[in-house]
Amino acid sequence: AQTLTYSERAARHKNPAAKLLLETIERKNSNLAVSVDVTKREDFLAVVDAVGPLVCLIKTHIDIIEDFDYGLIKRLEELSKKHDFVIFEDRKFADIGNTVALQYSSGVHKIASWSHITNAHPVPGPSIVSGLASVGVPLGRGLLLLAEMSTKGALATGSYTEEAVRMARANSQFVIGFIAQRRMDGVGLVGGDVENEGDFLILTPGVGLEVKGDAMGQQYRTPDEVVRESGCDVIIVGRGIYGTDLKDVDAIRLRAERYRKEGWDAYLKRIRS
Ligand code: UP6
Image 1: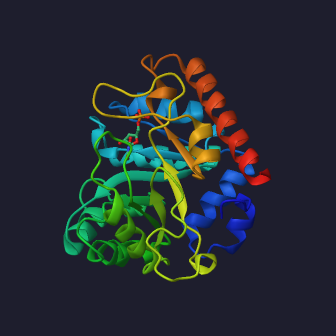
Image 2: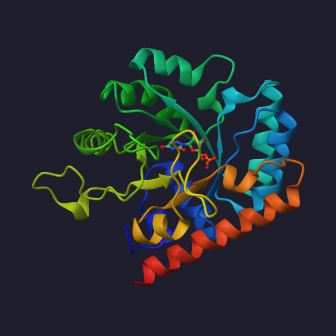
């Protein structure tokens, strides 16, 4: 998948959420996802509306919204149609199959009913995938496994990462890829055939152009390092785009366009190399 175009991959992919994301990336010439980590409903909607035309995907942490009600979901879905972006609730499920199935389908947020893509930590083993799949597959959803993390000292390395990739290969109808810092093609494969292992999408957080990290262990790399050098498919940017002044939507839009262009140029360099 490293040198294939997004549209070639879209045509081959069987999972509806993965296909939608790859088609959206190609249609909009954008491999940029914005993580809208703000706590007020109106700020959230204003940022989504400002960056919507420039992104393939909006990533949410819906449980940080203080004035949440289900009307917010209706508005988010309208913006997703208006601006043509995919929705990814970054829930990072991590419990037993029965519990995650309930957390995914029910509660206040009913994530499965509106989020095309969600993610899970592989730490409980394959039962977390089957639990989430029981809810997500009938709805045409896709799951990402956290194979690596962007933070300093992350424990998701080595054999843990390899096991995550094996879990994905065993469930490739529902697991569409990884949150990771590099391509996972062939990782943990013993005597297998890399060409036939399926197409996993790599969505990568920890992307920033101005600073190398924050005071709480986050580490940033540039879009070029992530997409061209490490072969990732989607850059996820939060604070680097929405910044500190949520009222200045023009500046937010300008920063989003800068990251969109950097991410897309890095992809073009990668497929032409
Ligand atoms: N995120 C990471 N690193 C990971 C996994 N997820 O940063 O390994 C998420 C965070 C946040 C976003 O939960 O929503 O990606 C990064 O935000 P930032 O660009 O503002 O640092």
